[in-house]
Every structure is written in C-alpha cells, then in structure tokens.
Length: 388
Image (cartoon, rainbow, N blue to C red; front, side, top):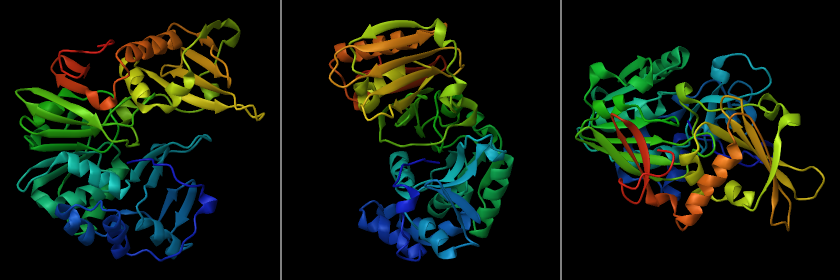
C-alpha cells in the first residue's frame, strides 16, 4: 500500500495500451524481477485486482471513461490508490487508505521475506489481494493466510482472489492480533506501516522472519526485517518505502491549521541546528524519529521567492507544536514552541545525540522485539538508543 511520488498528473502521457506482458517487460528491463517470482508476475493479472476507478497521481482513472488509460497504469510499475478516507466521505482532506502497491516495492519486500518452498505465510493488510495472489501462486493457497481490518476491502479482496483462481484463508479482523487459530507461520509480511511491532506476531512466527514498513509520522521510510528465535525478534532496517499506515497506529495527518493553536502563547528561542538536515537527510530523520515518538512534520515554503521555509513539528495528540524557520545564509534559526511537550527541544536533543555518535547511517541501527516491547539500538542490541 505504498504512496510513491511521481510527476504531476498533467505531464503523464499514455503512449501504449497496457497488457500483462507489459508489466513483466518493465520489471525485467529494470532488472527487478527475480527468477523465483517470474511465474507469479506473469500468471497473475493485476487488472483482476483493480477497481473500475482508482486514483493515480492526483487524478481519477475510470475504466468506463478511458479503458486504454486505465490499463496503461494498471500494467505500469506504479502504485494505484483504491480507497480514500477509509471509504468514508471527505471533508476536503483526502487521505489514501488502501491501494495496489508498486510492483517493484512488492518484489523488494518479498525478497526480504526470503520465502522458500513449503513456507506458510501470513500477510497483514490484504488490500486488493494482489500480493496474496502472488504468494498463492508461489506457495499454494493452502500455505497463505491474509487478514484485513476493513470489511469492504476484505470482501472485495476475497472476490478478486476468487476471480484469479485462488482461495487462501482471508480473514476480516485486527491484523495486529495476527491469526492465532492458523498459527504457527514461517513468514509474516505486513503491507502497512507500523510504529510498534505487536508481540503477537513474534508468537505466531516462532522460528521465522517478519518484514514490515516501520517508523512514525516524522520518518517511516524503512523496512525492518526481523529474524525470530526463542521468543525474540531481532533485525535491521533497509529500503525507502512509502506505505499507508495501519489504522490502529496511524500518526497525525491533515491540515496545519488543525494542529496550530495558541500562537500568542508560544515561546521563541534560537537554534544553530540547520533544519535542512532534518528535512533532507534520511539518516538524521531516522535517528530523530526513533527517539521522538508521537510527532509528525510539515514543510512549508515561503511564497515570496525568498527561498525561506518553515519546518513545523506537530504532536499526534494536537496538544503541542513547534516551528523552525530556515533563512538562506543564516547560522541561527528562529524556533517557536507551544504545548506540554517541547517538540523542538526533543528533536534537537535527538539530533545532537546522532551528531555526537558520528552521524551513523540508518543501516547501523536495529530493532529488537520481545515481551517487554520494542527497542531500537545502534550497532549491537546492547546499545539501546535514548528514548528506549
């Protein structure tokens, strides 16, 4: 359920009518179609898992209105949004809440999962059912179980899978609880971003592997791959995915005006930390996100051609906010804060720790999950980072 960024919709031009062979050709030409997944990609028609209309690049594509354009993107290496706002009415803000993932991202995750013949797999987040269909083709439907929280999405996925000739176990329920009645599993793949890994997953994959997008609202562009043994899951981070959130762990989202309040009561200070690093450096963002929970951000450019901009830090509970104003050529930057949490102070402290440690790459960090919860560490599991 990824949300990759693409060119503006008005720049898109349909040059070919999409076909299943076209998707295979694209993935092959990119060198991103592993031999073990060729059969699934060739045999499972993505069109069977895409609704009559979907959102791509901010535009609605309808099969009835323009079937050629609809097919073009169905068989392209792009994510297609299949649901907004949990299927409810929009109040103006449109939040993508279900999709058909970008095929290369699906293959990247499946590569991390390292599925072998005979493995029993549980998928958290059925979505359209396309990923489950690939797994069924590879493993056999009797080796695949998938769970989806949204009843309408779950029902449609069941129908899609049936139309494609697959009948795995499809459960409508809380994916954070897994499917205990069908456990144990050898592999668990989660197709939505997580802030906390449920221990129920570890219990249901007692000697295997877990792969999921992980992070928080400030930075979630990481896969974590966990090896499970003796009741403990341990692993490291990789990749740069952009996935929709598990609804039970969804961080803040919406308009800045929904979170910004009591500006006349804010406190003003200065910082020498260049917010450009926090905005652009994924290693810095990861290190801050791992230490500062319950926070997300908005980047806001000035509209006067000054190249000035503001980084807004917003607490998920809407009680606290902070801002830091970037001005080109300056070495100090104005900070404003309000609320019970001093979000900039927390962020600056986390950044300073990362800087003092020599600015370690994200790949040096790891995650451990056990009955006590989850802990992020640097280099070795005994070096737990601040905040844990």
